[in-house]
Length: 100
Image 1 (cartoon, helix red, strand yellow):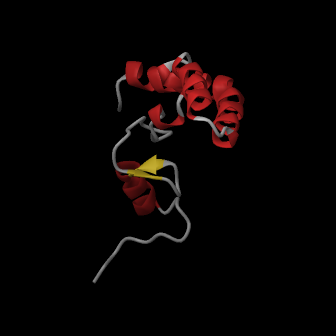
Image 2: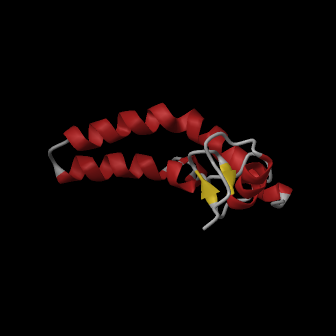
Image 3: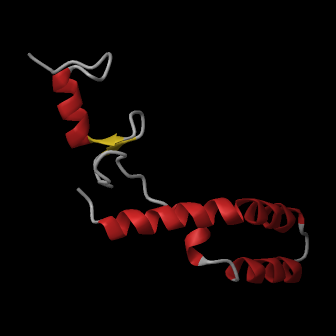
């Protein structure tokens, strides 16, 4: 189980990302369409005024059951430990324990 503070921090990052998502997209479109370098620098300075945790790259993929961030499978939304347990129990359809 991950630390609760880390999980809560990730939740606040997700909230900030959804809050500033459209503002960032609009600024990015303006920045791409701008021709002069000076105007691009001005637009980039407005990017710097956004909170650091509002960027999508700051969000960490976490297991929905344990909160673990490493060994995360995107297809299932869980970490490898939970995936292994669920596979042994037969909960995940289409996955079988390997035997060779």
